[in-house]
Length: 629
Image 1 (cartoon, rainbow, N blue to C red):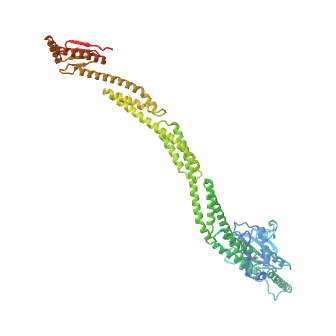
Image 2 (image 1 turned 90 degrees about the horizontal axis):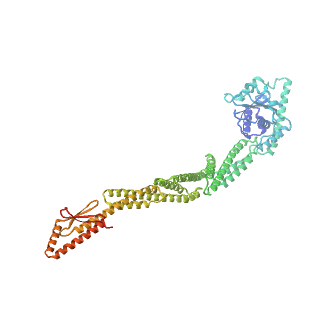
């Protein structure tokens, strides 16, 4: 916009003026706080200005505020105009402005408002000043708030679109062409020359009023150009604001710290404050609104980045206090994720993009580290819970353990619980608890290990006792009583080594009576064998000689000794020599017989068995000896 109010009013005398007015109103509506895009079309019919505003079906503008804003804007744009129209169709001095509001795709408007153009001497200046005041604040004016129930005339709103002289956007003809054709056909204006005096007087009055209006508007415009900034093309506030925005952008491009961001935001905020004061009739108004929207977007992005930096600082602070619980790590994780999301939301076209790209790798690295700590904390809690559960199983098994296999399983179960606790790192909240449990579980594992050792020893002793008993029985069967006695005694000795409260104690005790009885029997048999062996040794000793004295036979209840024929002949010769007077030979033979008798008596006493002595032919009992107690 590079023209002043007077020029805009004058251009409404042409179709291009109506088109420019429509574009001005479109820009004006877009700059309102609601920010709803409208399609605006203007026509002049029977001296009245008709304005149709269309919007998307899903938009819900505030009708009273919208109509009030449009009324004030139109008053400013066409203030003081008394000759405005299309072609030869002028605006009436008492012209009405009819506003229609319609949703795209519908034939009929859904809201209507009308008002009279202000044409008094003071209205132009007041409206201009009011517009200037309104341009200095982004809020909607207090304006007219029509009650649609009372002001919306059904005959005004429910009209055919052809009568409204505005086509939908898909039509091939422009609205101003349809307006011109319709107005020329329905209400042609005769030329000035040749008209009746009354009609001519009316036209001259109309043109005279137009001249007065133009002069008045020119006068007001001159005052505004002197008293209001940006009324003409030159606009120093805009230029200063634009330069401030550009400085802020350069600062953002090279930003390296939060301080740079805050400084840039201050500059953008200052520029925005200046841009909001650019009035809507200024030729720089549209550009100012574009820069303002861009600055507001950048300030919003700066706020997002500053928020990300704040969350990163908080996450760093919370993450230093190791160890942290799962909930605390999740809170830190959420802070990093939120900060990263805010940085990633900055588009590549933003001057903040370079700053965010420098921050993102660090943020992501910190997030990865936090996730590792979180995983470690979660894993530590799982290991702690698993260790406790395993310990509970170990206690249960220990309470019912009977065999060595049972106790070995108890020992292994305690070891599994201990191994789980040892895997808990010291950076987790579970570490201190794990250390306490390690001491307790270690003691219980030692007890179980000691029991396993006792059970193993008991098992070994029991098995050896059984094996020795089996060997003793075999020796008995072989009449090897000495070996039998030795193995029975060893078996009983192994049983004595089996500790109480072991799985093999009771089974071993059941073997004791049997093993002792077997030992006694073996010892008795051994004594018999030893006695008989001594008997034989004694008999062999007394029967030995040259010539051999005797032979013997040990029966069940008697020992039979028989002289040898050689010994019997020697005795006979000795007795014969004695009869011949050789008493030496006879004496030697008598002494031998006496010695033999004494030895046989001793043998009988030792063996506890009677001895019978027979001659060499075993036909005569020559002597007997009974044991003497």
